[in-house]
Every structure is written in C-alpha cells, then in structure tokens.
Length: 368
Image (cartoon, rainbow, N blue to C red; front, side, top):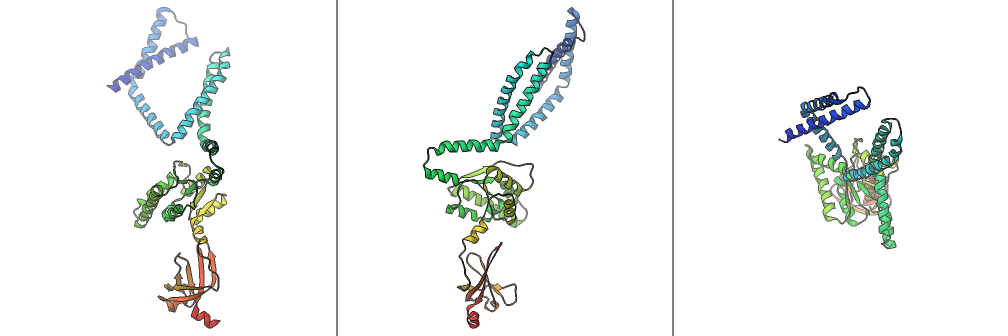
C-alpha cells in the first residue's frame, strides 16, 4: 500500500516537473501558443512527464533507497560533534550567501542573478560544512581552553598550576597488554586524562579473537587491564573515536592523534618510541621508568644472589634480582642452584635494561 502511494506521489511530482518544463520553454519563446492550443500543450507536458515518472517510479524508489543508505553509511562515519558543527556551519554559510546574493537579483540579464545566487548558496553552504569539520580539533581545543579559563577563575592558584601541567596521555596497544600501566596509574604518578583510541580497542579485540592461543591470551589480558583501569581506578578515561581512515598503521594513527591532542604517548614499544622522538612527540616509556626506579648498584658492592643457569660465555652463571635485572656471574657456572655472595665488578646500561657483572666473593677475595 505504501509503495503504491509513493508511486502515485512520484507521478504527481512528474506532472509538476512537466508543467515547469513547459513554462521554461515558454520563457525562452521557442513557440508562441494561445487559447485552447496552449492548454492542450500544457496538458500534454503534464501527463507525459507524469506517466514517465510513474513508469520509472520503482527504479526511482530503488535508487532513492540506495542513496539514502549511502548517506546513512557516510553519516555514521562522523561523530555527533562533527554533525553538529557541520549543521551550524551550514546555517552560517547560507546566511552569508543570502546577504551576498541580494544585489545579484537586480541584474537585468535574465536568469544570471538566479544562477549566480544558486552558485553562492552552494559554495558557502559547502564551505560552511567543510571548514568547521576539517578544523574540529582546533575548535574543540579553543572551546576547551575557553571553558578551562572560565572555570579556572573559580579555582585556587594551586588548582590552576595543577591543571596547567596536565595533558592527555594516549595509551598504545603494547602498554595495555603489558599490564604495568594499571599499577602505575594507581600510584598516582600519571596526571591528566588517559586517552584510549577506538582503533587501539579494535586492535585489542582482533588480538583477543586470534586463533593463536598466545595472542588470544595477550589480547584478553589487555581488555582485562582496561576494565580494571575504568572500574577500579579513580582517573579520567576518554575513549576517542577519531579513526584516521586514510592511515593504515596503528602506530601512525597513534602519532597523528597525539599531535592532534597535544598530548603524550605511553608505550613500551622501542620502535614507536624512536619514531615519536623523530617527530618531536613526547613519550612516556614505562621500560625507561622501570629502569629509572631500579636500585643503583656500584662496582665493589656486595650482593647475595642465587645462580640459576649458565651464561652465554664459557664458565659464566646467571642470576636475577627481584626486579628482573640480570647478573652475569663470572666463573659462576659451578655455583648453579646455590646462593652465594658476589662482588659487583661493573654495570652496563643498555636499551633493553641494566646488566650487572659480578664475581663470586670467594674468587674475588683470592684475587685481591
């Protein structure tokens, strides 16, 4: 029933188009008809266009549905913020076009004023939508800074200083899977909102759905860590919906989002860290933090360690501190499985962490 009504309405619309087509032809004075002849020609135009539109109404409805579906799909790619700013920009653009088009209607040349006005409306309508949505981040930052300035007027100087130091911290996939970020946030050493991009969530879900058991467990662990941060920790969490469809790599998207938000990346990915440094993006690397808080060990200090396995070189034994720092015990292979006193001989700092070289105290005393 609804489909039949739509076909009738399309036919009536075609009749209207036929009448408008006749008036347009008459304006150009292609023929001069009067009386009954003119009335018959008008009816001919009206019914011809009406029948044509009615015959093709099914095709028109199908195409209309496809266009509506396409528009709906495209709109879903934009956030509510984009749509709202685009609507406001469109209204402003149309108002400007209306004001500029008024003098054009006074042009004596037929249709020139109308055509020029249509062009103006189209141009300023397009610019009104495009400019705000393309610069949405700058607008959001400006409004955010304005709102922050207004709110800061009601705060104490201590609150202002604290707000000034805070900036968004963007989490990457590796640091979420690592899990230590939850404990670091819990201690309160990280200030400012934590930003979790939607494309990082999508990558975590993809890893959690992997057929590989190890990857699947890592992905699920990352999702559990996010749930813990959101539900148990008293910190602001922002799920950012910026997608960057024109960029394929997740790391590149992270760098772009960090630049956009003027924030910092929290990661333990060595390669991402280096690329971010090249692009002058600030990075908080939790591996560097872990190395920084490890106890300082100086040559000559005495330690008690348990040698657990043999080392790379002949005769070496390996031991580990509670924080995972490797201790290479020279001539320590004979002490595997034993707890012995060692003397630190040197400390080597590498990109992977700190490595301590030591000798068994018994051998060291003999040498001395």
